[in-house]
Structure formats: structure tokens, C-alpha cells
Length: 231
Image 1 (cartoon, rainbow, N blue to C red):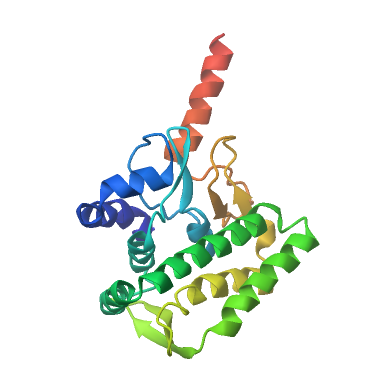
Image 2: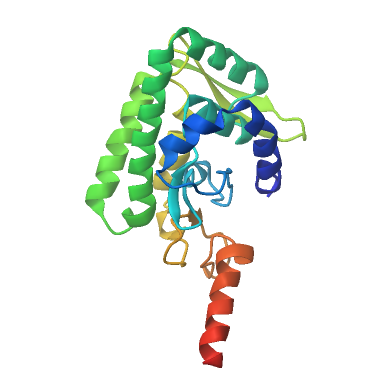
């Protein structure tokens, strides 16, 4: 919940440092509203899938460049400020490597979206996504740590050895691996709004959650039903 509340404010603070002209041209040919990060998935891997979203009817990608990718990892508490700054410096020194890391992140995201939307029903999709997860796990060497957070809680982190970009996806694919191991796919949902691509973990006791956000998609559905009854 804390991430969900803080994300728009943190993203807004980060936005001035992001060049808007190049990003808008790379996201979509239209001019959608500014992209912001949302954290409604209840699981890290699902929040990562939700970096591809729909804003005012246009499909947009919040990971519009490598800086945005690092922004998201930092807001999601995958990277602390020191590591994020170090990776940004490395990206300036190795732009080709940074570009390749972003392309790979989007590839993994596509695979995780397929798992979120169809993995419960399709063994083939589960197998394909597992291959992607193992590919990322297999190429990353480093140290796993448990780190304290400023609010007194703790989180797992992965510090790569060698390639600074190789370990960025590790916490995300480990989160997806946990979903497979713990049998959580049966609780993964896509928002019931037809045009909303967001996915989430249904943590309600009766498995009744339908909307990514009741204040947004849920409220629009209520208004639509009310108007239909009035007709």
C-alpha cells in the first residue's frame, strides 16, 4: 500500500530529469497523458507487467528508456539510491549494454504477461515462461542479501558480480518463480474492465476482487451500470 501511495509522487519528482520529447515519440504515435508507475499488483512481477498500461485509450510503455527502467526499480525498492546511481553511471559508459538490458527487460515482461493472463490454463505458456525465468537466473552471478529498509522492514536484494546490468531482473523473475512454486497463479487476475491490461494478485478471502483499482476501473463500471439501468 505504501508503494501505491508514494509512486505517483516519487515519479513526479523524477519526471523533470527525464527528457519528455524523446520519450513521447517512443511510447506511441499519439500524445497520451504522462505515464506514471502504478503498484496495484500485490506482487513485484505483476507490478512489473503493469509497466505496460493504457492511458486515455492509448497503450503506453512506462519503461520508455533505460532511465525509466532504473526509476521503476528504485521506486519498487529493488534498487537503493546508491546502486541506482552506480548503474546510471555504468549506463553512460556502456550505452549499448544498457540498451540491451532494456530490450531484455521488455522481453521478460512479455513472457510474464502471458503467464499472468494465461498461465493458469496453459501448460505451454507456463513452460515457456519458466524457460525465460531460468535463462535470467542462469546468467546472473552475484550475492543475495537481506537489507533493512528505512521504515524498519526488510527486503531481499541481489548484488550482481561482473555485469552490472545482468542482475537487474533477478528480483522480478524470482517473484514470478515464487508464484509458480507457491501455486499462486490461480489467484492472478486481469482487471475486469475490457480495455484495462493491468494484472494483480487477488488476496481477498473469497477471491472476489475484479478491478485493478476500485477508484478507477471499478467506479467507471458502476457508473456504466447505473446509466444502463436509467436507459
